[in-house]
Every structure is written in structure tokens, then in C-alpha cells.
Image (cartoon, rainbow, N blue to C red; front, side):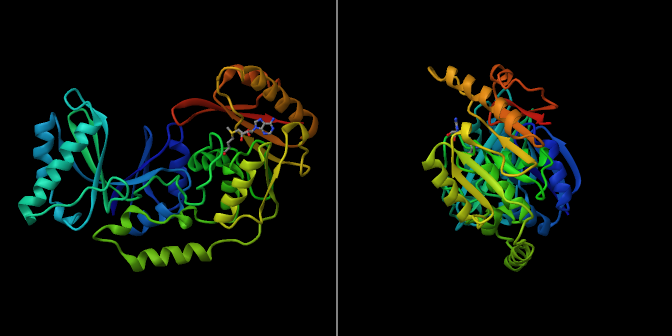
Length: 374
Ligand SMILES: C[S@@+](CC[C@H](N)C(=O)[O-])C[C@H]1O[C@@H](n2cnc3c(N)ncnc32)[C@H](O)[C@@H]1O
């Protein structure tokens, strides 16, 4: 058994903790922008492949003293790096957090990196090259007070990069946030799903992946742990094969997405094809004023623009008013959700909310508003 730490977006800690428990994690403890849990290597691989709401899984290897740069350097030297790193492997180091003396993440990361490669020089007479884009081993240091937690990043690049979305529309949602929103709305695949402002299709595609029980990591090129010294290829292949076998081929309903921008809709179609859900999601180019309910009941989730760029204010007010009118007039029997970062625009919807959930879209504080449409 090992200790792991999943990093998540602010506000999604509880949802992520539930998801990790469902995947078999034990001793699951939500923390600020992360979740601690325990498990074995199989669980580590499985969570990287299956988790929809988390960014990365870190494997803490040491908690060391780091009052200042010199102490950090000396503490890193005490770790036996031969367990994790061979000079033939490339390396990158990231850092988060700060204290009084170590208050520049880039500088702190440099101290850790210098100490590791100096350790290698002493041990082997040669050192790892640095590759910030695609390292064989990605190390993170997290400074908290006078301690630094050194971890290996088992995911490599963030897990929101599923690999199906090279094409992106205007202000796309992160796939991890889209998946978390879908969980929060308690949408189930027997209900119709519709996003009338779908952009590059993140919400419809993530609901289709969930409904078809497709592991979100199946389309990624690589996970960090695949180039580790202890990588167990047979175990990994077993987990991937199992995931492919668990995929469903039908769902009881269709999933719809529309947007007024035809180029973005073409991108959404490409994205859905890239992850094999193109037959389950119907994307159409449509102005919001022309949408009609594709079923008697279902769930709408959308994130309208809420930017405050010059000249767009009036347009946005009209858009939020239109959303309210269309929900009320054409979607009786549905439940609608709007994710927005503007409370002023929210008021323009003109409908009573039955729930408001606070969360973050990147660094922007947002609210997910729920409307029951009778
Ligand atoms: C913030 S983006 C949605 C991003 C999307 N969730 C994604 O992940 O790509 C808002 C979208 O609303 C669309 N939109 C704005 N006004 C519209 C209208 N009147 N009718 C239809 N679509 C509209 C824009 O084209 C844009 O793609």
C-alpha cells in the first residue's frame, strides 16, 4: 500500500473524493485542491485511466526540511534517487507553495533539480537531461512552512488532457470540470442531455463517455508512470484490456449539443469522433433562439459566455434573458443548469433557482445554477 495525492480544481474536492472511493481508493481524505488516498500500484494505474474529475496523481516519496534554499538542497541529496531515476532518463521538476525564504516556485524547482543532478554526478559520474515537455520522470516539490513534500507525478501531463480534443472552441471547459458538473447534476444516461451553447462539445462528449462507460484515459498517448523504472507493463495492459471490455455500446437516449458557430460545431464533431462517441452525440449548428426540446424531459447543462469585454455587455444581457425565456417556454419537464461567473448576468435569466453550487472555473469563482422547469 502506498499514499497518493490527487490534485483537483478548487471546489471539486468532495466530488473527486467520491469518485476515487468508487474506483477502490481507501482512506480517502479531501484536502484543499486535492484528495489524499491509499492504494496499490494497480489502483494507481486504474485511477489514472478511469478518473474523470482529477488533474494528476502524485506519489509522495519524502517529506524533507526546507527552511531555505541550502537546507532544501541538502535534504534532497539525502534521497536515494537510484530507486526512481537513471541518468538515461530525462527529468523535469515543478514546484508549488512557498515559505518566507523559498518564495519563487521556479527558483525552488531549480534548487531541487540541481541537487538531484549533483547527486547523480556523485553516484554515476553523469546526469539526467532536462526535458520540460515530456520528461521520463516529473517531480514536484510542494513547500508548506519549513517542509517540502517531494512527489513523483504519475500522470505526467494533466489528466484533463484526454487526447480527444486537439480542436478547441472559444473558452472551452476543462474536461475534468465538465465531468464534475455532470456528476453534480446527477444526470443519468436514461435522461436526454442537451447543451445549447456547446462550443467544442466538452459537456456532451464527457456525458457520452460516462454513459458508455468509456475510460477517459484510453485516448491519451502516455501517462507519467509508463517511463518509470518500476513500470509494470503486463499489469497496465491488463487494466487497459479490462477497460476496453467494460465499454458499453448503447445508451437509452441520445445526447445533443448545438452552437451558433458552425466552425466550432465541426470541431465538436471531430472531437466526438476522436473518442468514438460520434454516433451517440448529435451536434447541430443552431442559434439559441431556434432550439427546441429534443425530448419530453431531460437535463440541460451549459456555460454561456460571461466575459466583460467592451461592447459585449448588451449582447450578454440579451443572451441570458433569452436562455430564461427558452427554458420556460420550450423545456417544460426538464432540469436546466447554467455555469456562470457573473451574478449580474444570472439575474437576467429571470427564473427561480432551486440550487446554487459554488465552484471555480480555473481561477474564476463561478456558480452552477439549477432551474426546475415545470
Ligand atoms: C463559453 S463557450 C462554451 C464552451 C463549451 N462549453 C466548450 O467546452 O467548448 C459559449 C458558447 O456559446 C455560443 N453562443 C453564444 N451565443 C450564442 C447564441 N445566441 N446561440 C448559440 N450559441 C451561442 C458561443 O459560440 C460559444 O461557443
